Image (cartoon, rainbow, N blue to C red; front, side, top):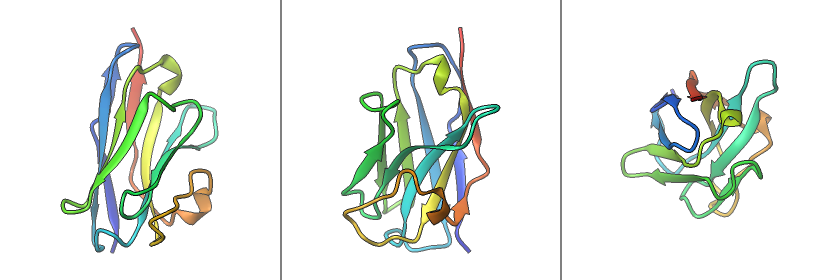
Length: 128
């Protein structure tokens, strides 16, 4: 069974950086696209970034473009979200999720219902 586990969250000052990792198990490495989502208190879950099954296509929310970068290492079944120039508005619980999408040219950033498998989430707090 496909499982996802996030790591790398924590507390960081504004302007700082964090790298989130998503470890995927129970599935072959190129059988899925990955989305990163976040949910702040009192807000709906929103798409942050996505990456296609082979890493050839990535997408970003406007709010994080130029600051966040998604990547994956299929040999290790790992997906990463590098977050730079963090702002207090980035504070949220971050989730990685898997979409059974084997098209290397597309990933779906805003279609949460495509993602059938979710990690447990990890807290990212940006505060001075």
